[in-house]
Length: 231
View 1 (spheres, rainbow, N blue to C red):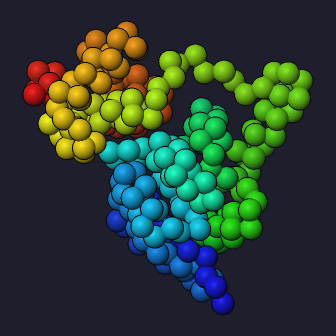
View 2 (view 1 turned 180 degrees about the vertical axis):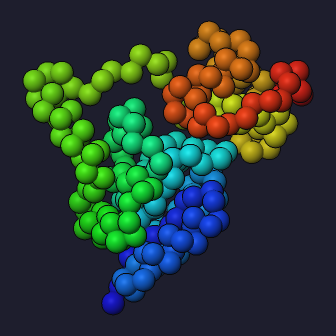
C-alpha cells in the first residue's frame, strides 16, 4: 500500500509528536518530515517532496501563509492543509488566496485531520464546518457581484512580508541579513523602502501592522529597543 507522504510544519514539538501519532495510526499516512519554522517547511518541501503539507499559520521566521505561497509557487502540485487555532474570516480569506486546499482549527479530532489529509490527496478540499459555511456564503455573494472582502492593506511582495515578519519578531539587521542570505546594507535598504511604502517609520508601528495583517501573532514580544534593532 502506497502511503500518503506528509510534512508537518508546526513550531511546538509536543504538538508535532501528537499529530504524528494521530495521523499515522491507521497506517495509510506517513510523516516524512517535521519543520519547526516556515522557512524549514519551504526547504523540506523542496528536499522531501511530500504530497501534503500540514501547515500551522503561526510559524517563526516565516509565517505559514507566506510559506504556503512560496511552496505552491515552486511546487504547485503540493497540497497544503492549514491547521490553526484561529478561525477568523481574515485568516480564511488569506488561506484561500494563498492556494491552500484545506483549513482545520486545532480543536479538530485526529480522525478529522486524517480524513482531511486523505481528501486533499484525492484533489478535493476540506474545511472545518464553520469555515466551509463562511466560504459558501462568500461564494454566493460573489455570484451577486459582491465577492470576498477587499483588503485595504497595502499589498506586500513576498520578500517584504518576510522582512516585516523578521522585524516584528525582534530580529536585528545582522540576524535578518543572515536569515535571508543578503547583506546588512541590503536589509537596511529594504527596511527603508518598506517603511516608506507603509508610511510607518518606527519598529512598534511595523509590528502593529504585521499583527493586524496576520503576518505575526499578537503574542509576539517586540521589546527590543529600536536602536538595538538597527545594528
